[in-house]
Image (tube, rainbow, N blue to C red; front, side, top):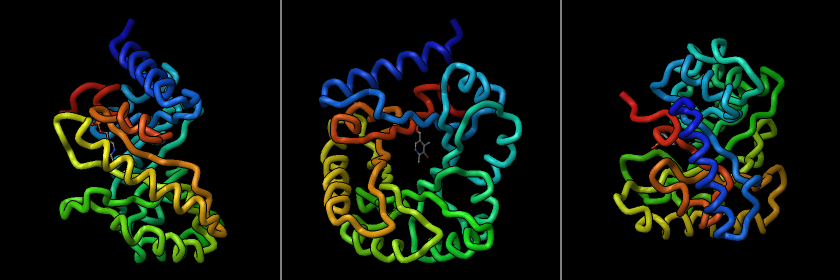
Length: 229
Ligand SMILES: *Cc1c(COP(=O)(O)O)cnc(C)c1O
């Protein structure tokens, strides 16, 4: 059995166990395979072993791969999007998980309208309020979403966050819990044109804790493909 196939099976088992620990259905957890720095050949092998959702950080890198990977797949953008790349991004990606500013939202609105599309987005929250990370401040998230909700060609489908890096994943549990609370509170507002369905949090080193705290989308790179060069 190839190492990729083995890795995918192991990750799926761990997702299942974490879901069960938190009393949830493992089938409700989406696995996004994060493909940055990995070749189209390797991505194809992952897809042939059951991966459906692919996450890329950069528009240019995704563009060089999309035509080379075949199958029933969806590409999600998970990295910072520059406004001059929006037009290409909405051609490639099924979902933009990294909406992190109002100016970007306005640009997506403009390009989506021109293309006659409605773009699914997740709002990226800077859950650790880190200067080195993109994202909306946790305290501003609700107001931001109310504003984005007025843009007819964007549809907010949930939240995404990258927790601060800690050796011990237990140390990020509180961040995940906080994001889950924000998610829940916005969901309960039932804002028009907003559908709070996806909570995208958790990466290779902390996805089990994220699932235990309510994530239903995890983004895993090295856990599937191995160490990035
Ligand atoms: C790289 C990346 C991941 C995956 O990280 P791993 O540690 O390789 O699992 C997830 N989300 C985002 C936004 C990333 O940039």
